[in-house]
Image (cartoon, rainbow, N blue to C red):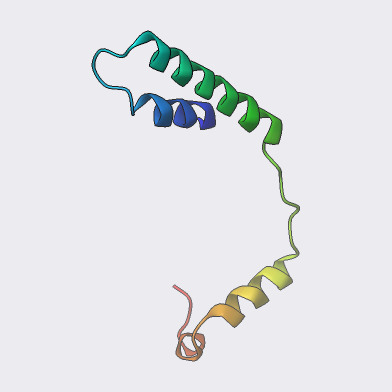
Length: 71
């Protein structure tokens, strides 16, 4: 999905009949973006304990929201 998005961002700028040099420049740009995104890859974040997550969410709420039950 990331590759399709990167490709469409570059190709969206090209409309109608495109000169050969602009088409080859766009192709090169697409290939470099795909290579860069695959190198970065997807980084998974470790899970946090449930108590820490709930405390963080509770701390971020306004004070009036703490009185209302969660629905």
